[in-house]
Length: 131
Figure 1 (cartoon, one colour):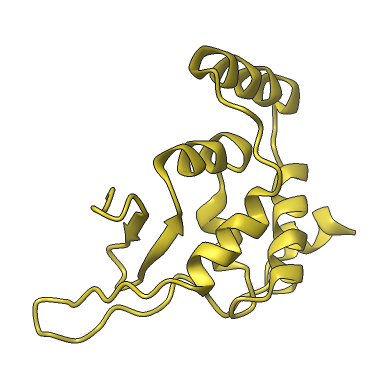
Figure 2: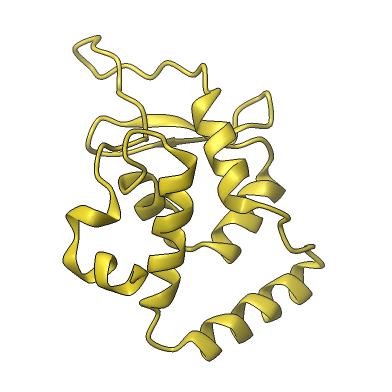
């Protein structure tokens, strides 16, 4: 959701919510650079930037058609005249870590952070991809 402040808010169906980008352009840059951004948050070990970078590297290594993905990234960037993001993982971390958005469920309870407690070490496929 694009907020009046121009931040992009993500709300999951599992009770997690937070700001994921400072602008819509930054969100598109994130999605193009790291389409598995939600998995980076899942394997963030509670919001550790180093773990997020490890997760991103492991997830990138698992892409089946890496050449096709890279070609699609370039095509999207060119079609939208979108510069490549300098540090999409760092920007994602900063957006979520400083998120002050409060989303409440219908019963009034607040949604939790988008950072999850897992690391890639909890997933054999990603752990092996990182090795």
